[in-house]
Each structure stands twice: as C-alpha cells, then as structure tokens.
Image 1 (cartoon, rainbow, N blue to C red):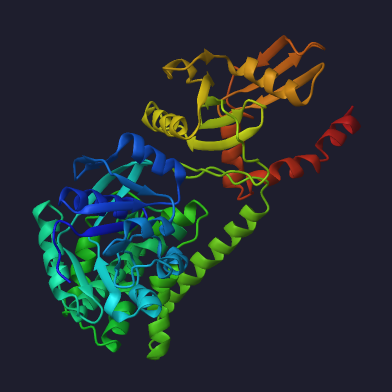
Image 2 (image 1 turned 90 degrees about the vertical axis):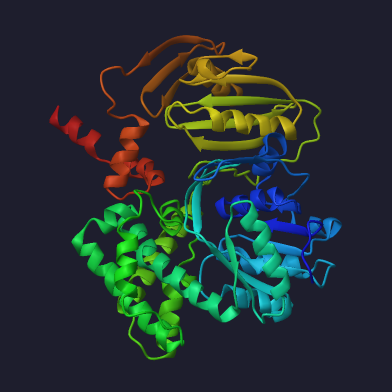
Length: 504
C-alpha cells in the first residue's frame, strides 16, 4: 500500500507520545483522527486545540476527535497508531479488531518488549507494525504537552517487513515536519526496542521504589551500582535472544543516563500516583527471558517484585476508599452514585484551594452531575480555565461561582463567595439548623458557628501556625506511613482524653 497525503491516520491515546505524533501527522498534511477516553481532554482539544511546547513548539486543531475506538468506523483509517500504556493494549485491540476496515495497519508506539506480538496475535503479522519512540514529555494541561527531549531518530517497521513502501513514505513525511523517523527492518527494530527497554528498565523501577528523580539516582554511587547491575543482566539476556550489543554498550548507557534530568520516569510517576505500571514489559520481561535461558536476573527480579508489591498495596488502599483521591495534573472521576441528567441548565462551582482546585457541576434540580479535582499549581491558572472551557462545551453552564483562596484571581465568573459562606450554605443544605462546622483546609482550619436559620453567627480561624491543618496532617500521615483515610479511625481509638481526665 502506498502512502500519500490523502492517507487517513488514526491515533489512539493522547498522552505525550500520542500528542506529539498527532500534531506532526497533521502538520505533514495527512488526514488525522484522534481518540481518547478522557472526555475532558477531548473537550479541551476540540475547543482549544493541541499544544506542544518545550523542545517542540506547535499548536494544531483537529476535525475528527473521538471518545471511542468504535467511532473510527465512520473515518475508516488506513493506519492506526496506538500510544497507550502497554497494560491497556489488550482491551484496545479488542475494539480495534471489531472495526470494519480489515486491511488497516496498526502501529504500536509504546514501551516494552513484545508488545507488537499483542497486536499480531489479534490481527496478524501483515497488519502489525511497531514504532520505537525516542522523545518524551509530560502534560502540563490536558491538551498541552511539554516535550522534554527528542533524541532522533524514531524507528518504525512492520513485523513481516511487508509494508516497506508504506513505512518508507511515512518516515519521509514525518521527517519533513521535524519528527525524524527511520524506516528499518523488523530485525533492526528489535535491537532498537531492546536498547530502549534496557535504558527504561535501568532507572524506572529504581526511581519509583526509591522516590528519586533520575538525576538523584545517577548522582549516588550506591544506586549507580544497582543501575549497572540491571544493565549487565539485561545485556546477557538480550545476547541469549540473539540481540548483541557492542562491548562498550553498558558504559555508553551509564554515560547517557548520567545526563538525565531532574524528573521522574513515567513508571515511577504511575507508581507514586497509585496507577498500574508497565513493569511486566520492562524489568519483568528481562526476568521472563532470563528464566527462559536460565540466566540469573536477581536485581531485575527484586525491582519487579517490589514494584508489584507496592502496586498491590496501593490497589488495596484505593479500593477501600469511599472516593478516589486526586493525583497528577488532572483527575476526572465520576462517582457511581451520580445520576445522568437531562437538564437544560447547569451551574458550576470552582473552589480554588491552597492544595487542590475542585470543580462541581449541578443541574437545575441541585443534583451533582460532575466532580473533578486537580492540584493547585501555584500561580498558574491556565489548567483551571482550560477545564472550565471544557465543561462549558459539555454542559450549558448558566452560572459560575468561585470560592477559596484563589477566588479573586479567577475571571469571567458570575458570583464570588468566601469559603465561609460556601461551607455554611453547603452543609446547611444537608444538615439544616444550628451547628458548628469544622473546615480543615490545606493551610488553615475554620470553625463556623451557624444559628437555627443557617446563618453564620461567628467563626474562628487558626492564625498562629499550621499545626493541625490539612497539609500538616497529610505530612504526618506520609511520614508515619499511615493512609490518610485511616487517621480518623486512629484518632477515635485514642485514650489520651481519658488520661487527661484521670490527671485532673
């Protein structure tokens, strides 16, 4: 199949990898459709386009933006790039298999060993391709990626080498718009895949377990010794798989890693944010192939098992929570009890707190239809305005109320209220009558006294120190390695008050 500027290309997954690919494919003049399950992200891209910054500087808009892989049937792409976390590939392939275009090629652009086999097992070798990505970035907002580096070229190949003309022309088009990509044989691609996997495995698990940035890990002689051992084990396993590296490969890897930045690899970010990781396709694959060839991989095994143990603990803790907690830049969790609404008018409340910014949408029957929170990013209010724009595109927002410490910095709102008034009004909706409200915030504690008519009669704030505030309690919980949700139960069990009574 030949590539022309009329080729239709789909991209599934709009993380940093998918965003960079989508932007360059669009700039190359191809007809592009993009897909992501995150409705907020899709809404932002529809209204504000997609932005690349840092090492790449682009802003592009797309005509075809989908929330479901099944929507690609109407678009009928010739190629689909899949840039998801590897753990999500099996479920994506189930949906891709259902698409009507049975000649469509699928290019997996993701980390790990053997992921292309997960594609070919479903649709066959002739339709399966693999791409090795040599750039990275992080999302500063849902529709913005800051590209941190690009070490060209990327590599692309088809599993049975049957689509050589297609990948040749595709690589030329990407090269013309600054995303240098080299079309290679599948055997050459395997070597590039191993090289990248070995580099990823050397630091990802270690940084996640040790809560260290890559720069911190490479700045400590003890952890560098661990990194070197991970590399040695991986190179031996690769050789057994007939992937041979030069004698100075390990030293070159250590030299390359010593120049890494002061940030966390993606697996470490996932681990620290209680998300599933790709460990089975990185260090775990090295262990798997080591067992196949009877090669000891004790350090890789240790880090694989440690990551899995932490992930299991995180999953158990998360499952016991009433509602998922906010992590990373954007979290969009709709609680199961929230009902679907058919109202014509909706109202948005934005609480710009010191630690988190919270968004709530209610319908005209005062039912909650949307909940979301994101970490408050110092003085950067761009993510807040982007979320509001996305919500406006999804709901008919009749009014916006802002509260919290940052309320006065949010423009284009209809009502601004203090957190005292909002707390009193909100609690009184569920608990009318005289009451005392204790609001533990990130930086202070407020005690609000309401009379029988639900009006604020008096209030008190701690203004001497941060002791007892949300940030203080969170810090104590983390240092004591106690889940924050368990702090209340532990406080109830305390016998300290009884001790004070006996002293009297």
